[in-house]
Image 1 (cartoon, one colour):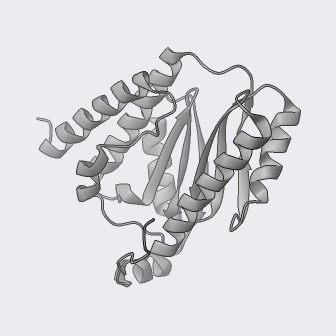
Image 2: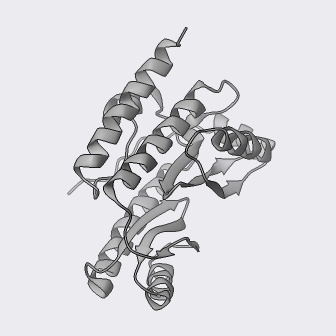
Length: 214
């Protein structure tokens, strides 16, 4: 029998996959606002979350100004560590993209996983979105993992796992991901923390974001 939460998550994944086929530029989210009510806790501080959003916006703007439309680069910042995925036409562009992003304010590290190749087909992007959805659903179903501690991205069958996790959580999530159909390779971009760090995070009260919005 399928758990009710599993059915909800899988349905949300299907909706995300459909959205991905309609717009290759739209970010993949699991369940939108509805999922946010289920997974409301983030191990990053509220300040780090805001910094990550700012880093992604600034980096995207600088890459767009420098490279125009000849590249397809996805920027994911987690706790100020930036992962670059997507495709560029040359090794020169790949190196230039890393240099540009490394100079963005508050970036502490860049992991450059850009491929030197043409952009994948729509069917490949749809397949990647489906794989991401399956992994997120499996993380939700796993009683020993906190799904909100992980960020999952898939590019051309390669899955990137990010998050603030313990070594035990990292191993379990990695093994779980490798068991999912369609996964060709797993790249871990984790920031490892101790059990003591995890307990401290779990007991630290979350302060509401009172930053004025424009």
